[in-house]
Length: 336
Image 1: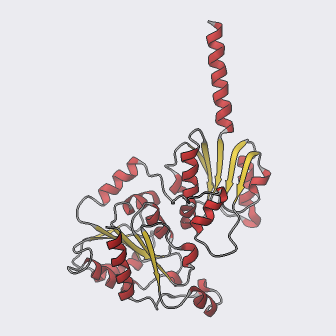
Image 2: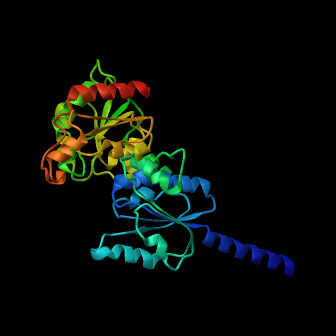
Image 3: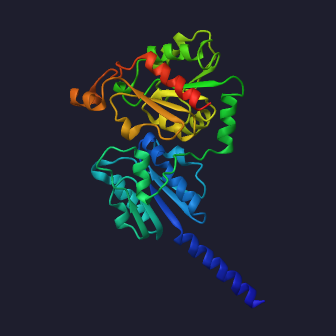
């Protein structure tokens, strides 16, 4: 009787020990798009370390993206503070744990001041490469894992309610984090008209408009251009629900933004519109994606503006509707 009890206690103690030792701290980005770019590395760890428990440190905007992560112990919200106080808070919340692995995609020194069996800290590429490839270099991963999001059954059910089965859905997000990165809304409206016209690639398709809670005005030109179309306005939807809805979209067209990367991460054919941001670094990643920019190169636009972020209007005016339509048609045909 005593021997089996000792055996069970030993197994229990061993399990607790292994659980503590096989713990991973994953430090990722504040911005939504960057966090999604880094998600392929997290997915690799989830798949290749089936006994690991995960703690994810990220900014408040990106936190909802990770709610469905398997074996997630906790999410540490890093709210930016003066003089780097958010890093000190992260250290206080993680220093008492002996980590099996700390992966830092923020390129900080945090991993060096924590107890860890292994530390992997991202080194940024000195030359422009896609940020998905750069993120994978933190673990020397080849092939590069695609970004991806873990979506719960409840979130997918809500998406099915918002976008029920029926005719194909054309997705669009006319907004971005800065005005200079936004293609004019009237051009989005004209593009949507042509794509769902009788002679377009998606005749009679429903149009789903995505965006943040303050993007209703940016979406207005699309509503105005499509008075007879079935429009599903999803601006202001939560991040996880937005990702699940994007998964139900046949083709997505949008500016360089977090939602563009989200669309690519859920494997929806995604066309990104570029101008004042470097497509070599931030283009949507994967064989199901493509991008287009106008005649002006990123270097030209960068040289003409001391600080692009201060430019109050679009810097994509050299990107025509005709060229974007043709690119969307090519991507649609290629992914059919």
